[in-house]
Image 1: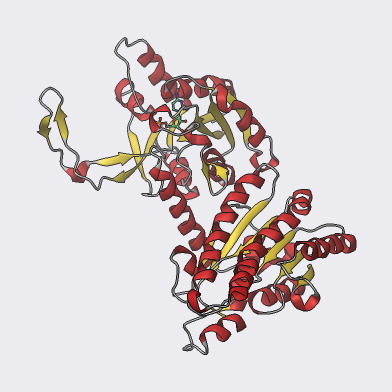
Image 2: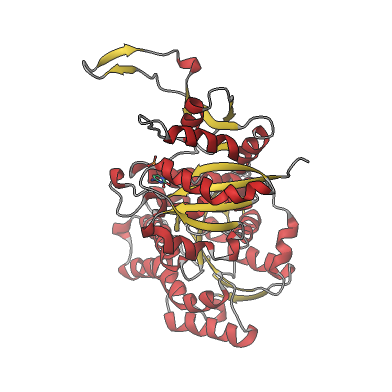
Length: 465
Ligand code: C5P
């Protein structure tokens, strides 16, 4: 009788990353407020092709990873085990830990580097599919650089292989358990054995086995050097941008029912559209504006508003801050009182809201949502205070996402392209039709972010092409 297949994701997170000059193992470096390994685990957890997950780690990371995976979010994680000082020893630990399953299942091991957090469900699905026909498979992308083979004695080129036949190897790498186990049994008897990946072991020690190639993605990048953390961060942002361009399934908004939402600056523009949409989905919404007696520059007023909300509704799930002012004037011409006011509203407002909201959001495991502007990446003449405060808001979002991650509070930021709001009209007058996003669309995408799981993200919203 054929045994049912069991796909086990093996997340290799036992490296110490000493070569790369990080202050902690690479898998624990933060990306958008969360350790790399958490991003990687999330993809495996959400993959329909993975039945269970094993994390292989080292003593330094074990406790943190155990705490992380104790969360229900990672229900597929069945074990966090210790690996070895070489990568292959970590793979061997996973093989040993899964052998007992072979009695009841056709076990397939899908090894993946914890430090490739941008792997996606498509790649995992293709690996699982390949394992229906092959006992080994690798994930690769075409090589874009010319690769040269070197004569190390003379440090000169030996030969240049034909690039059309070269690929860059990534992970995951998938195997039938018995195949990879046999390969390692033979390898360990070889006194000259050395390897950097599991496919290399199968290729050398079980040469009859064909290793099928699955196409990877260029952004399935492995973190090796510090600069790559910035690249991963940008790639992650681009991914969330793509995700926010997907049409929203209106059913997700059903989750807003009975949720408690406070919108600072909810009296006009994007904030008002969020208020209306959330109310239409039966959320309890509190509008906090100067009109309702709440000025974000006044910490006491912000605190009182949140305390009143809790007194009325018992909790606060989401705090949104859209309050801002945009004055178009050269800095040198501005009244000092206006300078202070602009910084107070655009920056201190975000700080005050964050300070006042933290305890409530910790209790509800909720989310703080800030708003920035596309000017944050590059200061704009004539609204220097607005654009620099918006840069600060992005920075604040990233920092708080890290600080509050362990408390279960998510912090994100919306970066809408130029949007048709009363604030923009006051500053720039009437602009050509079709050049602005509608604030309704921005509000829809923003509510969608509130209902999502991520933290530390800056969501760039653009008009659909
Ligand atoms: O060091 P390198 O970048 O090749 O590591 C690739 C992956 O293998 C990383 O996720 C790392 O944590 C893991 N690894 C491991 N055990 C080792 C060495 C590396 O699990 N001894």
